[in-house]
Image 1 (cartoon, one colour):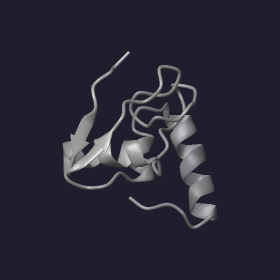
Image 2 (tube, one colour; image 1 turned 45 degrees about the horizontal axis):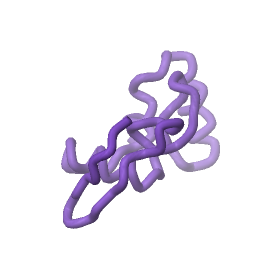
Image 3 (cartoon, one colour; image 1 turned 90 degrees about the horizontal axis):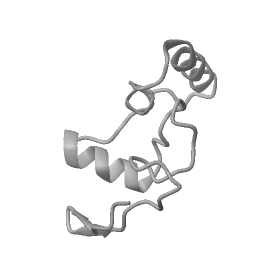
Image 4 (cartoon, helix red, strand yellow; image 1 turned 135 degrees about the vertical axis):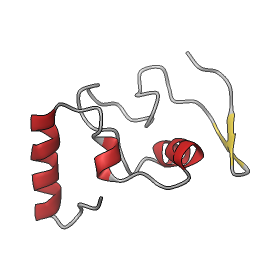
Length: 82
């Protein structure tokens, strides 16, 4: 369990609970996408990449069929951006 407080751009973030994803602080199956809209994930990603994550970033670790299904559904809802 990570116990350090992260300081990102002057904000202090507590680490995710042990039962949550350690990248997005949301409870999800490890094969599913990270929560792109999670404040923790946005800060974590921005700290490393200098930009905010997209759904494509959040799904990068997913199997191709799952990525394609999510992309298709996100496009139908007008929520897809690269």
